[in-house]
Length: 190
Image 1 (cartoon, one colour):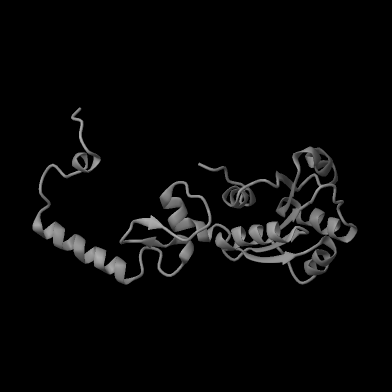
Image 2: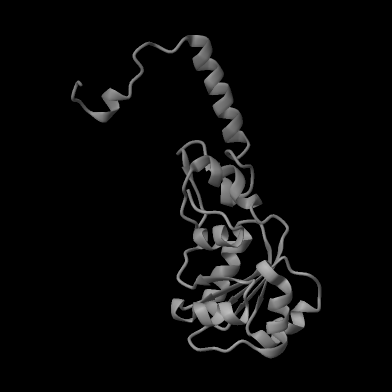
């Protein structure tokens, strides 16, 4: 194999026909005029001039999956996020909203129990801090949610939580945003 600079190795071996070159410019101009691939949604927007994704805060995997499907993964699903740790709760909320969820943040289990009577939530994501216990009325709401209930905690508490909430999905609080969304939709990462 010939050694050389990367830009030399990636040059086409034959010239591009004039009609293909003109058509490519027309398509490129149309993409640039529309604001890039993905329209106005910043979570899935591709800048045609620089060929890079922006400004999503999520890590990317398979570009076609992230670019064209990410914002529809939880599209329109109502999600209740319960977390006493404000910054962590907001980060969870933002991750779910980037994936298309309509999310509500509650600062504790007592307020969350009141939120549950406002209407059905497809998913309830509870993040337990340290040794925080499950609250009475809210625990009943988690049981009623079945697999829609997601409890994030320290791994040392997982067995205890599985005993109290056998149908709920129990996960680790240290998941990144992408892993959290995929955990919610019960899909392994590629």
